[in-house]
Image (tube, rainbow, N blue to C red; front, side):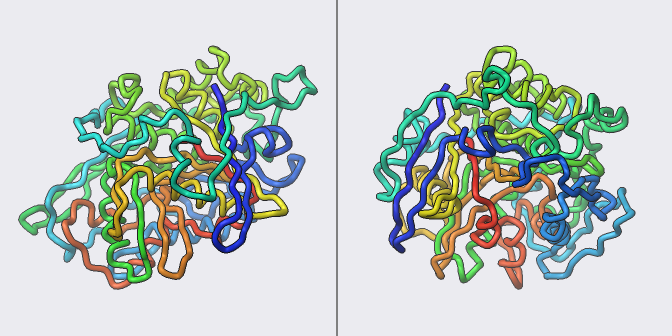
Length: 455
């Protein structure tokens, strides 16, 4: 097992950025979902006022969190669906005058009663499987990415013999010290989100009823790509494999973002039948099963200091991060590499992150000038202090600004995107407004000094 360390030098604008090895982050430990700048357990949390959310949020993040709840309800007509903070049973509204469908959207679930998503998917000639390392994958394309080298597994703090220091609320979240999650929540996870009927427009232009899983949206990348095509400010955009599902939390679930991002990665592994897909022969494993797989990885000696740092995660709501996702995948013989970025006096971490992600997607397609670049690349697990997301694409705007395109597991896809799954063409007054739910640019990222991605 190894971690890659890539130095990022000055770009065309004269900026200088540098990535850092994983152990340099958070005083020698890796990032986790709740990592913040403080050194103690006195961080201020509050319950999200949206009654269907159930998440406990850092007060410093509450404003952006509520903005994303508003984005969940945007329609293609630009009118927001009203939010009832106390209503936990309402279903998405339906836009009945949308475009005709070529096919209906499909969904899958945590629960064993739902169908298997594996299917034969053509393999891209531009995939990254032939590369031996992140250095090889990123090298040879961008002149700003040089001198990549592989480094040994990072050292941990040594106060306990190198096994890892027990973390607290600042890293593991408000439930850092609990022994077990509430019984009602465990049962909710075991049962999975119940299927519901949603009206969609069929191939004949008439409204049809389809069973869907409320917290899972498939085929949304195809809708997002059409929105980018319509946005006059977008110069070029890259997308990962289109079968990646947007999996969000269930109502009143709370914060399990790390696990939901792992599920999104598994949705790719299953659909693309990439290395390791045999490990997931049925429905995507639920959160409890993922916890077992991570604990099994620790038993095998992979990133084992995570057990000491967390005190164990089985049956709890403790937040996880990049090392736990990596441990699980490696234990199942699924190849992956972790890459870390940290700001320095010479430059910002997010600029180095932009360079690496853009290069990653460029290596997945032939060089051309098309506005929409569709690849078969895997999504990326993305961690910053306080939260983790799944990177599904990269956008460069005509102004020169750059954006990561992400699936945020804390929020479901916007209403307008869900309503138009399967559309062969779409019409929208303001595509940028819908795309705001997926874009993470400098304005969002510059407040963080460190990032990790899992490739």
